[in-house]
Structures are given as structure tokens and as C-alpha cells.
Length: 95
Ligand SMILES: [Ca+2]
Image 1 (cartoon, rainbow, N blue to C red):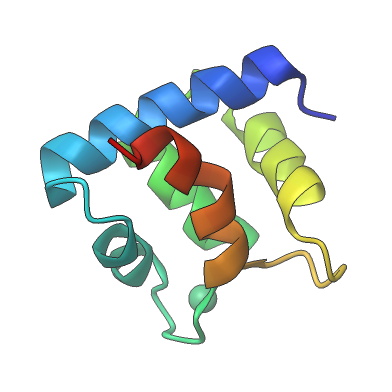
Image 2 (image 1 turned 135 degrees about the vertical axis):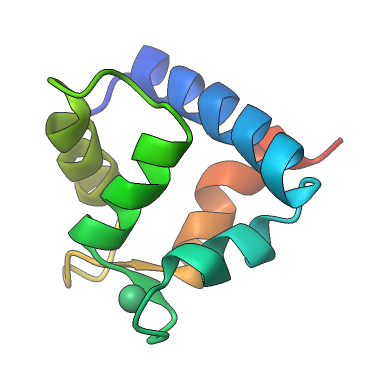
């Protein structure tokens, strides 16, 4: 399970990345990493996003990806829907 520290760090890293790369446009970032266009991020798609956002290290990134999905994907399908993604990161990005 992701701790509050984990969540905070995740938001900061992702927030900085989305701000720098997508001008703070979270929806654009989501669309870019939703490679198959099903409006959900799979483990693989999320991991690519976290890799580019430089979240954690290459050794621990799989655990971070799984922890993020476990905390975020509420309907148990192990994929992060747009609404869940937005809820996870919008708080940090609202500025
Ligand atoms: Ca997808």
C-alpha cells in the first residue's frame, strides 16, 4: 500500500512532469499514455508514464506502479480510469 509520503511524492513528481511537458494539462498527459485508447491506464501504460515522470527509481518503479493502481483503481479492474487519474492528481495540479 502506498503511504502518504508515497502519494505526496508521486503527486509532486507527476505534477512537475505534467507542468513541464504538457503545460499542466492532465487530460493531454492521460491521452498520451493511454496507448490503446480505451480511456484507462493499464499497468504497462501507467508504468511508462511514471518512468517518463521520473517517479522513483528503475528498481522500485514496478512496486510504485502496482501500489498506485491498488490505491487508485476502485472498481477492481486493475486499470486506472480517467476520473480516478484526475482525482489522484488534480488536487496537486490545481493552481
Ligand atoms: Ca489504455
